Length: 193
Image (cartoon, rainbow, N blue to C red; front, side, top):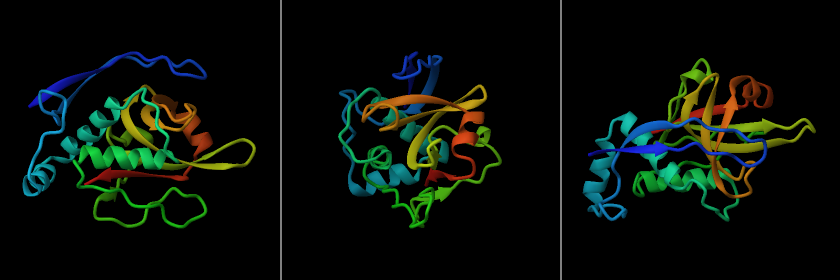
């Protein structure tokens, strides 16, 4: 069953960024009471494995959007994304830890995720995950993880927790030019499989 989810215009903290309205359709993941549908372990595994890649990505976006505005006391954006993917897959997928590298933008190998080959950010699809190292002008590199919600103009809108919002889940519009300046090539795009 398909339901429509409407993402309303949202004014973000910090520099005001007004996000355009977008109507998105996602597979329904909950029953009529808003609770995750109960399935046997076999049915649950079959449900996820039988989803198309687009269906899996939509499940990740829908789960992230339901978390908008909530305050979380978690140690990192990666932990929030990990919880979203785990919930979207109804407990079947756990994203891996970061590899030990100086930039923290690659994950350890896993059968649950695949690196998404792309030529530019405009190739990235909603529901994909970006693991990056954000470079601040003072020289610090900040590892960050976000879920792509949609492409918008010459950039992306992503959902995250713990970036410019002190633990509150929010959407951020990031222009391609700003991303290139702050991140450069220090990022990897992943898709949940």
